[in-house]
Image (cartoon, rainbow, N blue to C red; front, side):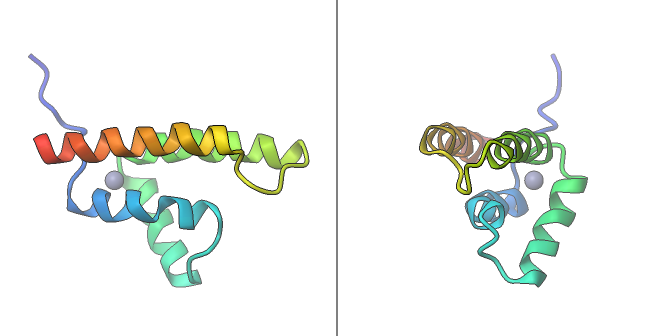
Length: 89
Ligand SMILES: [Zn+2]
């Protein structure tokens, strides 16, 4: 069977809990940078954050300044799933 190489680890847990602050640009510049760095290198939350960011970009282009509640809710559920997988890991 395939190894579980994508499970969330400590760094990912911290990142996922800050992901919405990052996407809403509520973090300080240093934190934003740290999150970006993690996402660029991480196989766990990187692809997830990327798809989320793309969704948000589309929303912004459509004139939505904020992440729509439906998107946010779905993303939160996904974050929760990733985090619980980390616990089970
Ligand atoms: Zn990660």
